[in-house]
Image (tube, rainbow, N blue to C red; front, side, top):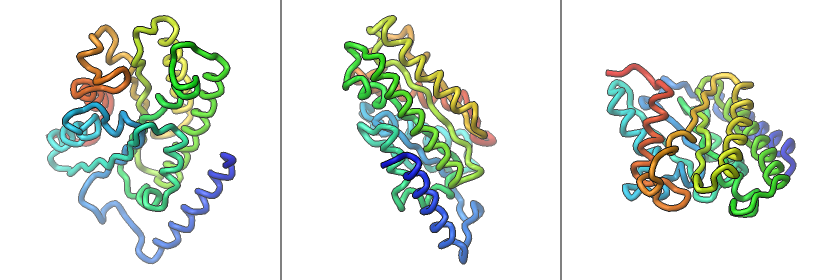
Length: 241
């Protein structure tokens, strides 16, 4: 489907949904918990964590410990294999779209599959034009995702997590690729209001991969813990005890 047409249809849907709430308008004072909606792929899903928490579960647990006056609930919309286009489809689903205005925060961690799949499914041999085309598609999708989130919810801060390079053995060929995609995402985020970009690529540099990864791509418990700690280092969610 054409990107502009998709976005237009989504905005029409949001307008209809908003009208349906006119009789009983929703306000954030109507609920007790602080809601975070996390969108992403298998890394948001938490694949590789034997405790089945991932960074999302660890973050929810730690937030409730640090901020006992608030009740944090993180809804996990991570799906294995998902690309940025999949997040757009998720946002267009009625069940998800109707909840966007209830969120207090959004987290977006997407792009690893966009990058790898645009090159044909692996990074053994790099194809510059395919990767560039894939990056441009990814950036268009991310822009639409951010626009949809903001159109649906004017107040909720958006946290965008940068990509990490899971293939340090690729050396000088692969590392600049992830840096380039991250820099392009940073440039996009800087043009938006109330969005925080949090880097992740430095977290695993200089570390033994087997200590933080469950396989060639996905993190283990310790790896997801580093992600959760980085989010809390870079962003304040409220008043601590």
